Length: 194
Image 1 (cartoon, rainbow, N blue to C red):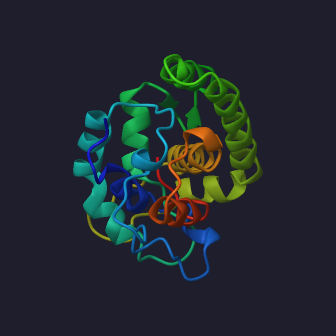
Image 2 (cartoon, rainbow, N blue to C red):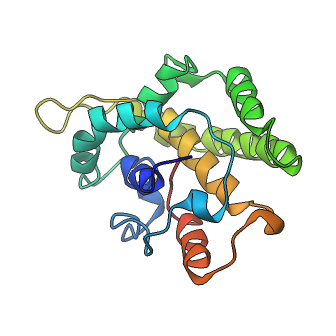
């Protein structure tokens, strides 16, 4: 089970989707104190402890980066997560290995998650391919402040897309219907989490 606020932390951890939002409605986090897992348990790539280790290491930098205008910066939280799974190298995500990890996650879940997950992977990699120029521009940025590490945006792009897509595609019979969950679903249709 995820800690109560882990998905809130993920929502503010990655700025790779920042350019998609005019006034960035995502900066303040979800509008309700509900954890997405309480609304719909989706397939996951890593255990919460692996995410939390990356979050603890990189969140200060990420919060500072979210205030910088221009080309979206890479999400070092997401790159750290991808590195912990050996899925990331040299600006590329190992799609086959990522697929295997996600399918391992869905093995004990409702059977409809398998196709939903495969469709999400396909859609997220297509979206990343369509945004490759912006992603590569983010990878070539120089530090904007002392100590900033530049991480490649591909990890944050894929993980944010997967989180948003899987939560948005939660089968109706598995989604907890209440006001908070409905608000959270609306929020996460625009704002990333992993």
